[in-house]
Image (cartoon, rainbow, N blue to C red; front, side, top):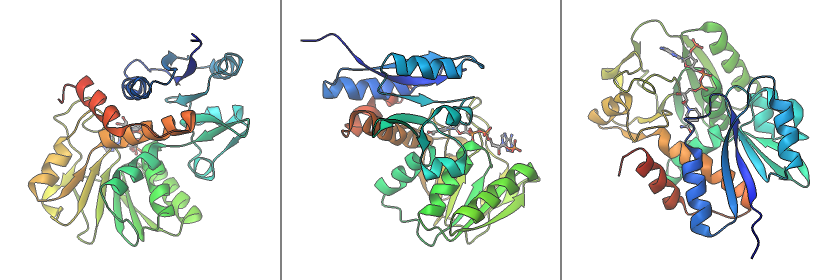
Length: 282
Ligand code: NDP
């Protein structure tokens, strides 16, 4: 019997409300693996020291959240092609002895659609927002063969930057729409995704959309990670749409981290139940 644990976790600031420990630790414990997930505040300016620290203490890997997803790249030996395109890493692990960076934000989203039997090939997608998560999701959707991505954003510069990233790196055709007042969803949209934080801190808020333009055959998704539903998803459900919530995306990101770190597959239901319990959903 040994007492030494395999260390993983997350570096960020603020990091106190990051719930990933709940689902990862539940899955490690259920599998009887000697892993310990630590939620660690690293202040701006201390990231290099923190990465050196994780190497010195033989961490198996680490998650990276705000504000370090971009900065961390310079401390790694290599990053995945997708993370290079997104210019952001949120999961680090050792690959062939090298410290390797991956971005699981978009991959977690794609996995939740896959588990729900949604085939995105040839589909037309509308994305609300153009920040880090919008970029990760758009690039993965582009890689998976969507036909068109409409990026709707209130700041043209960030919106155009994402459009150029998609057009320069994937087969999808991206267009920018300036978000000015109530946005009417184009009726040929197959998949609509809210990638803004609206609804996160104040659950009574919803993106400024003409909700009657949402048609029942659209698949509607939200990235808000702390709830099974949001006002945005409720509006879509009321119009007969199939919906996917950010909690599922969060869980599937947790699945990927677990797989990179342990080389094994977790029990997804253990993770899902742990986080639902944490949020008082069950
Ligand atoms: P960013 O700050 O990088 O991007 C936010 C985007 O939303 C920007 O395009 C911004 O527009 C837009 N936006 C913000 N507020 C408004 C508003 N009031 N009206 C219109 N547009 C708005 O954030 P992230 O992409 O990193 O995160 C977005 C959300 O995703 C967060 O709520 C986060 O919690 C969640 N998330 C969920 C995960 C999951 O697993 N479910 C994983 C990671 C994040 P502009 O460019 O004009 O500023």
